[in-house]
Length: 382
Image 1 (cartoon, rainbow, N blue to C red):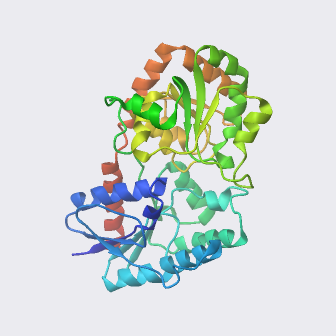
Image 2: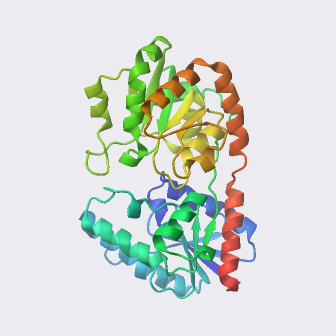
Image 3: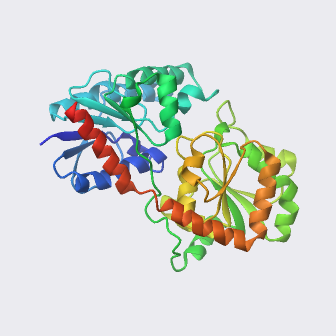
């Protein structure tokens, strides 16, 4: 029986989008391809997926300290330790679910590239070593037998930037996480308030805090309507971690203070299991990101029946379609108007909520897994 090896390194960061992608694949792949065996290789992290063998392997230099040591350990694991372990188990295909690939592998290789942010977004890298790693992996993934990506936009970018033949790049769209539905659970709002101290009514942002997320525009859009929102008992809740400001991360809390913007509340993080309830509690999700490979938060919000205001940039229109309000990412005035209109119109909230649920139902992890299996079969037959 042919076997597929899965690089489960993303599970070391269990709340990341790549970890969600990896777990979701592992959940569905064995059920949909009983003629294939699956091995998941972990350095750390936890995976519970019936039908998948989990193999823990470590690098000889895993205990090196500091950022340089961590990068060196990760690179050795990706380029030597994992390919060697996969070869010893005679995997027919080795799948890396993020933008990395082994230079040498015994079988076929498949890589999922969610986006090309490390290669195309200015200021992304904090060190020369980080930039060198991204460029090396940009070269390495070109050698893979197939590339999977998650949107038509990302496919076009991969073909353009990496100069990969079109027939080697396949789109398998992502889906909302389990639990994302409009059905409220008893006591969920009480639980949220006790854990996070949320305001009674709020517009939500949930996601990363890098410059590309464009939170500056959201803050500037909130300022002229903050007084009106206060009268309506409505705040802006930003769920994101803000490391020290640098070329990658802006200092959004400082911007709020300098502009004197009222009614903005910061929450550093929420538990993964609490996200669906958080979406359902919000009046709307505001997602002004200027660059996404896919854009899971808008899809998750729509699946929960929460209206979405999002930017019309990169892949986001493919996710939201006509089920949300799409705006130019840097037009703060347009964002102010749209947020005000949505907060003050229950009929618009209801309309977008219903349309969002219908839109989100078009995406499923089962479909993602089926399309991924088709890529495996394609490279095995080549």
